[in-house]
Amino acid sequence: RQEFLCFDEASLVAKLHAHMTSLCKSEIWCRRNVLGGLLPRASSSSGAEGDEVGERLRGFAFECPAERDCIGRQMGPISFCVLEEVAGRDDIFEELQRRLGSPFLQGRPVLIEKDWHVVAEEKTPQNWKDLQVIAYRLVELAIFQAYKDAKDHAKEREAAKLQAQADEALAAELEGRPAKTAAAAAATATATATATA
Image 1: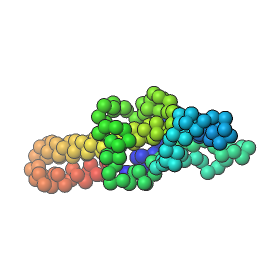
Image 2: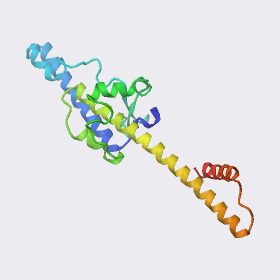
Image 3: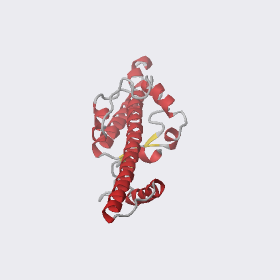
Image 4: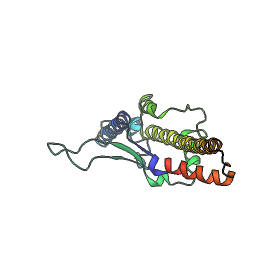
């Protein structure tokens, strides 16, 4: 499951990283001003103090290139990945419902993969919880896409098997020989479809 829960579309990764950076800066600013007495503690709830700061983006991580740029700086992230503690959950659908507020894809549109960046662009997260919602929304879309791809692949294999059976029957007709039994044709077709896949 974890293999399809890694997002590497450049604009999506850049937007998510920008959101995280902005929240980190906001958190630092709030902490500095609250601790310095410039703001009353209650006023900082819109920044970091009122959030579950310990969570931040727990269960998710950015992946950066190991090499550095020409002046020795760490290069920006190239992917946004779901860690095993989220990807490997047995109750992933229940967790999605808890985080997103409704059952799987209920009240939320299905987006094709090239439009997933819209999820990170629709609304600027005001706190870590908002950013977690964006991350789990991406998980929801990725799970649906993986299921759809698997179904489409199964249909393609079935179509290839049926086509191979039809081709065998046609070849037998042209040669004037008996067509293979259904079992033998199916076995040949399956082997052909597997080799093609």
